[in-house]
Length: 73
Image 1: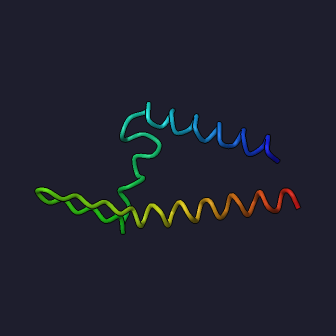
Image 2 (image 1 turned 90 degrees about the vertical axis):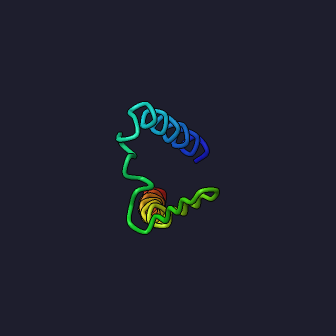
């Protein structure tokens, strides 16, 4: 289980590095620009609250964890 977790974290890190190298409009260009992502910019103030992106990420992680749970039962 620990080996699987380590390989998964390494794969996720590699995916993030590759996504950054592909530019802003790459694989994750949509992340942070979804509906319900709150972005308020004023002169001396900036607020960014990625509510929509957090919901999508939560759904994806719930599905992945559910699949992993079924796989190991």
